[in-house]
Image 1: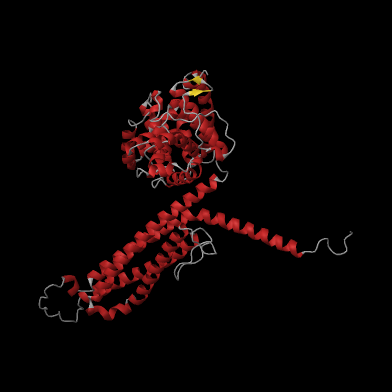
Image 2: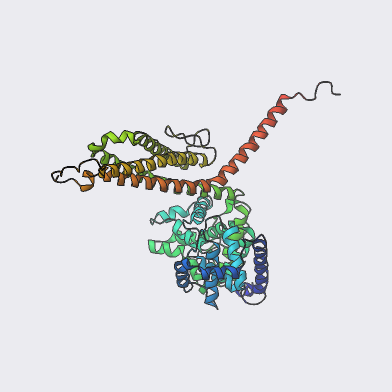
Length: 528
């Protein structure tokens, strides 16, 4: 078998064909993005704006460090920095994420500088799942969750083999997909994966990961220690040098497999194909590409739906954590406020006039709504929704048919009402303190009071300062909660719109079915 074309793919005609294909894809992305209106910016305009941005210093320093940390040598490191700088300026919401330097280093090997920028935009904005390189890395974490489900289905022995050495799959595959296999595989294999990625989409990440795991499975099974198990999971990094993985028990890739039941079947462990000896590099290449093609045939068609659900679950878990933190902070400062008010009997008669009773009611309602919202999210994550599509937890929880949007709006309404009450209370209490601390002109100055040991000065003059500080802290927490809920509503709105459209379509279908079932056919008087 003559494998010289595969071994020299990055040199000669193969590289030229790839450059033409990738450059055409980049030109289409550029034409689509820069021809749509006045707000679209070209590559040079983004570089100019980034150079004039005074707040870009931290990002620029991080980019300058990461330019030197790439696995593929770049002829012009300054070009790598410019591409990353322009992308950070374009992606102002997500900013720059470490790992993008790996991506751009490969792109600059294949195409010119500006084409590399537009291909990077295409990958992050259109091909990879949303939030793949965001601050919270929601998209990449969701992809790891999808891959974990696929491994349990197609390679069920991997997780028990890792668990034997107290290892988990997630750290390994997360490193693979975050760099899109750059630095993990030999260059010719990475380029092949990327050819498929630009055409087939993010599904290729799962296919490539499953292919690697399938090849590593025999070595992982033969591992006698945790060190050997970790080497088995990372042995593909030695392929570029032409060496074998930790175990030579690789499966022959040339046997046809017709169904998903054949996935994972162990075949010939020798380094020969059809009876002919081949090098380790050729054998590893053929094994990987064959497994990649195999999983293209057997992966489920509903992979996009699995990815969407994994991302929604991850975002729901993140929202639950943030709301829990707000609930804890609110409870802590509310207890401090109640204690400060209880220690101020001198101004107890003012509490009712300042509106403390409705504030306490609002705080209790807000606390209950927060607890109900967190419980509803956790019940949904546990897979225990009520009939209406969400968990019915607590007195304040309502059936959520909009993917969390309706409940977030309701919770925000409680938070805004509480904020208004607290703001009015603080203003009135501060004014009352000023009035009490400043005697009127016709009043005699008060007699000097005897010093009271242990009592702060603020508590003996004007309104209780401890109460004002505690109320201000509660108001700050409520303000942060309103901002958090605004962000969550913005994230949840697309899912709400989609579910509303699905519900309307289902309602129209059901109504049409009822009309047809209730109509007699053929109609009376029609010819037989």
